[in-house]
Image 1 (tube, rainbow, N blue to C red):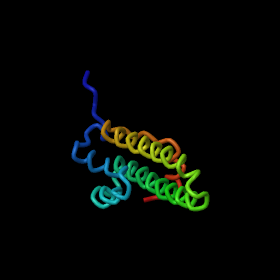
Image 2 (cartoon, rainbow, N blue to C red):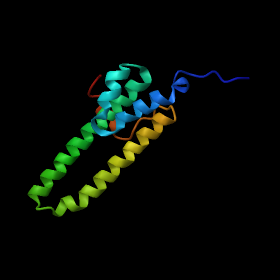
Image 3 (tube, one colour):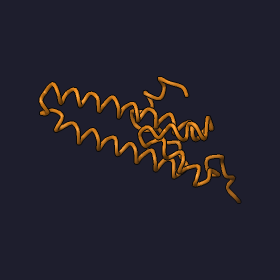
Length: 116
């Protein structure tokens, strides 16, 4: 018996590559402009935007801590923060390439705050 392909399974590699850009900082704007509100792409664009917000706010907080504490706390927090961001970025990209809609840890609460 043949397995019936769902919409997610029929997404081309080019489209998945474009959606994967959502997780690379401000590049989430490219799939947002090109793909619009398709279900699969919209899910990943929202998560990519949430990741962008977390990156921006986290980098701002670390920079302020660096100024206030003369770099003592920032030397410890900066590598941990960016390793965490890199992990979330790869998790999102792998989810796209596998044609899945995996919710990324901690970003789901940020995604609920906005609607694209």
